Image (cartoon, rainbow, N blue to C red; front, top):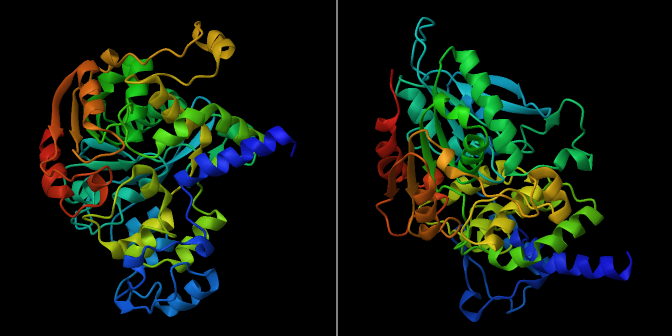
Amino acid sequence: MNCTTRIYFYIACFFCFPLTWTTPLSSVLLPSQYRLFLINGTQLEEIGQHWNETELISAIGDQLYQNEGRDLSEAKMTTVQIIASRGYPVEVNQVTTDDGYILEVHRIPHGKSEVPNPDIKKPVVFIQHGFLNTDSVWLITPNSQSLAYILADSGRYDVWLGNARGNTYSRKHVSLDPAEEAYWNFSFDEMGNYDIPAVIDYVLAKTGRSTMSYVGHSMGCAMFFVGMSLRPQLNAKIDVMIALAPAAAVAQSQTSIRFQAPFVNQLMLIYQTLRIRAYEPVDSPRHNFRKAFCGPNLFLRNSICQNPTVAITGDDYRGMDVNLLPVYDGHNPAGSSFRTAAHFAQNFNAGQTFQRFDFGSAENQKRYGQSTPPAYDLSKVTCPVYLFWGQNDKVVAPGDVAWLASKLGNLKASNKVDDPLWNHVNHLFSPDAKRLVYDQFIPLLPSS
């Protein structure tokens, strides 16, 4: 590395990687009140304020990953295997976008105790995950708490689960190799402009329906708003859109994006120089280490073993079954492009707006006909939209949700979840999600 590259590399290590980086074991600094702590119910003796890596591993020993009586096999299953193992029918569909990306979409056509009737074309509900996730987020909690199973078991819906380009299941292309940098030249702009139209048209053609309902979480909402804005004819194909923790403007975000965003241009240069393509893939050595050695212990989960998706959202594990965390780790983070992360950072820097990717003045002029990236016209989102958001969401703050609500072309309601501590991931994993969120919007979905 030359001097300039080396300096940029150090900046990346300090400002970017902490976004998702777990502290090396050898540098764990414990406040005095944490010198005695519990790991899976076992108290460890004090071994000093600075914990040596070898000592810490030895002290933890067999206490990690001890979950007698709990089935953690789903951590190593694919989402298709999880669905099937729980007794539900499942289909795998490959959807090719206009720009050549091949997306894997999963289908649960009916509930596990239901006798299918081929003559009945049930209403379609398409569910889309957020940044760095897969459709696993809708599938790994108990059946009575998971949105996908709840919808399927109602007997009224044909459930489809999306996977965004670049994640574990949608890392394919008709001509590009994911090992090539060119494959990763996308952000949620392309997801909205290409992926959303492709899956909508595919699902409707496959089911014989003319319209569908859409449920998105976080970036799953951003993708949808991009698609409807850039291709407004798609609105006619949507019965209703349910937006959970809807990511658009992130100007008031209280996550670590505040510290990385000012350096986004330098970080993009570093990633290009170091030829880093995939951003937080599930099978990276760091994530494999965490999955192998970190059980459900909350001390570890909030220090050396914190999942990058939790680090990004700034959420705690409130309301989550901590024993579910090894299963969650088996699937998430699921990878995306660095450009996707950079796109969110650019929007944070731009203030309360929702704009296209900023390529720099010259390239912007070529692509957009102006030197700055244009804002998405959210007034073109004319299908019915219902927002559900939490007061304690650090990613999508209440003020940003209010801004979004003021811009949408056909907002039906903006619903504050009736829990003052409701955060970004509670929509997915809280045992109260069914009562506080799902039961509120399922009656809004067409049932015939």
